[in-house]
Length: 145
Image (tube, rainbow, N blue to C red; front, side, top):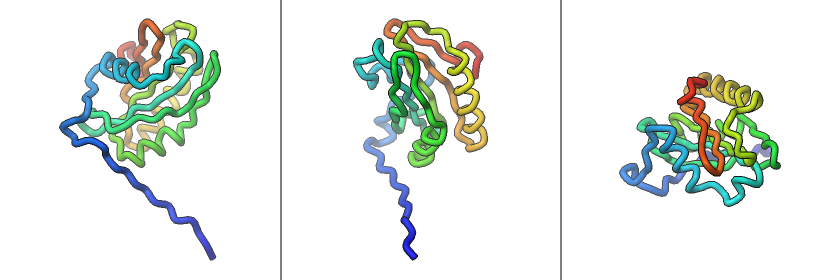
């Protein structure tokens, strides 16, 4: 009988002393702006930021790219990446091409779903940031986490 072997591998590219620390929603927003595609005003994209116990960025993953009105996010993929990187916390981020910073009901529902899964997995979701070309909205800053 043949069975596929599963191998988990993570190779850090930087020393801990070289990693970027996230302490505020502004820090997260600034980092996401550095990695975001040039299509912020065109299509919606979704990323997850992976942090160690000291809130240092150990990696990020672009989870999805959608159309002008939305994108699909699979919570399993969020935590697959988190577990592989041994992340101790995560920050979610997506953009609104329309420029509207207000979270939709779908945004709120997805955040609650992933936050609950994070509680179960002992990987807290610290924030969910919505980016627009001119600003950002933080679920944590607005008491929605």
